[in-house]
Structure formats: C-alpha cells, structure tokens
Image 1 (cartoon, rainbow, N blue to C red):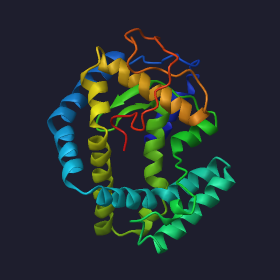
Image 2 (spheres, helix red, strand yellow):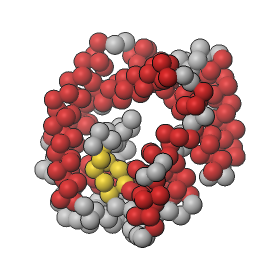
Image 3 (cartoon, helix red, strand yellow):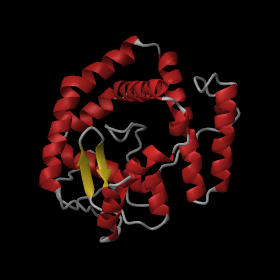
Image 4 (spheres, rainbow, N blue to C red):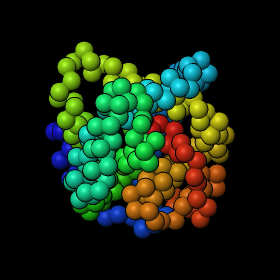
Length: 254
C-alpha cells in the first residue's frame, strides 16, 4: 500500500489517451522486460501449463478455478460498492453465499446454474470509475502487461479482500496454490493462441501491448477502437479496427 500513492501520483500527471492511442514512454525498458517474460514462459510456464492441462481432468481444473474465484468474490463486492454498482454487489454477495454453502466452499458454481455468473471487478476498474488516468503502459515482471493505474489497482486488491484477514497463514497457501494452478490451466488451454501471439508475431511486444490495452479499455468502458493483435503494429500508434475476441487475451493474466 505504501507504493500506491506513488503510482497514483504518476497517473495523475497524465490524461487518458484517445481511443487507439498508446502511451508507452518506457518502451525500451518494457521491451527488455517482455523478452525476459518470454524466456520464462518458454522455459517454465508453457511446459508446466501444457502438462497440467493435458494430465489434470478438466473437471478438477474447473473446481480449482471456481475455488479461486469464490475466494476473490468479497473483493469484487468491495469494488462494486466503490464503483456504486449496487446490483453487481448484491449479485456477487449472493453468489458467494450460495457457492460457499452449496458449492462446497466454492469448488462448484451452483450460482451460475441459477443464471448468476460472476461479475468480476477490480480496483483498477475502481480507479477508472473515479477518473484516475490510465497512465503509461508497463511490462511488469511475473505479472506481464499492465498500466500504471492497473498496477496500482493490483497492489490495492491485495488488501481489499476481507477474507485475506480472516484466513490463517497456513490456509492462505491453499488459495495461493489455487491461483497458480488456475493460471497454469488457462495458459495450457489457450496455448495455441498465446503461442501465436508471443512466438509467431513479427513484433510480439507490440502485439501483446496493443492486445492488452484494447481489451482492457473495452472491458472498462465498453467502447473504443479494437486492435487486431495480428495486424502490423510496429509503429507506436498503429491500430486496426478489427476486434480481437479470444477469451484469453492477456497471456500473463491470472
């Protein structure tokens, strides 16, 4: 939390770019970090994730993902309230109650069967709601693509979940492990798409950056010019109007 005001101060000195524009003043450093992420992905993350996706039954993978989402749901409720989204807060609170009790602690998702899918929210979205600018694009070690605002949001999200203060330390490792396995499962299931983005692109850094920014902006606002991750995006402001709709748009997302 101590780092949060510094990041917010960096964001406050800028304004949101126009749709399709990119704010990447740290591109040389970001590119070096991106190459490091690719080396880690090639050597560790990809082999582990493909092996996990091929050997662990899909039902088990889904249960782990459900458990992780259920644990994060109280933080969704907090962010919903901060964004004045009363309906979303009620839906997520009801989902948490149903899935924790009837879903065996969140291993199953009976709330979705009742027509109430998760309405995910995060503090990066809360900062957007309160008009905090996006800030510069960042390639963050371990995390991957982000922005100054979203990085501040990720820091804050670590402190927003009430369950984080209620669960004792040994049990927290179960939640951490579930998050790691969930990430491995997604990386493995969408290996073809992610591999094409990272290893088949003429400029994987520009493709990853543009794909992340386009989809994050669309997620937050529901509008904006879409960027095609397979278009020529070697220029700093190159864009394309074709939406990219693959469900695993961020190769490093959790």
